[in-house]
Length: 182
Image (cartoon, rainbow, N blue to C red; front, side, top):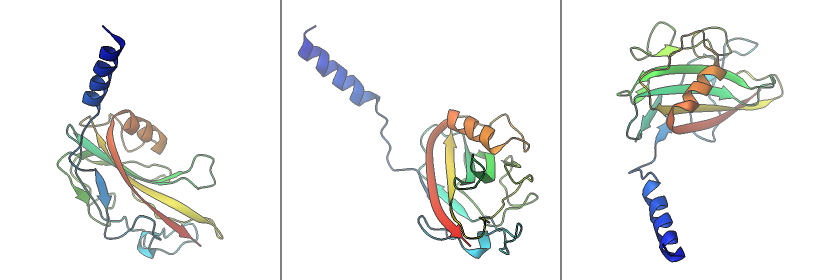
């Protein structure tokens, strides 16, 4: 095989192995806007904050082929912990789900079969933003399309462990990043 033939075959092989998507996997919300400021409804009602502690409504579209479930998380990379802070993690969301309603609690609103973890808050539900006084933090809301029906974890799994398992099975991710300060 000549060098030119080798390059042509290698180039064609590379082009054929690149996944092609009809549209990008996207995340949207009527409650939060990428690059915007988090509203008081999504702020904690604990730790010195007086928000309403309501999880935002989220919708996603154009999940990649092969999606078998979803995971949703809210993460503060700026928390003064050395490892950030997981405010909300829900996984094993069925593949036919296209969003979550606002105000999901431990007892209602989650899709059948979905699991909310205790994450870093210590309870299996959303915990709104509440950075230390004088600080502004970023809050990253992410939906991940997964290649597995379920993660073999329960509500006691840490955000880091769920993040590891989610990333190991991820097909695509979509995020909205907002800020909040006090």
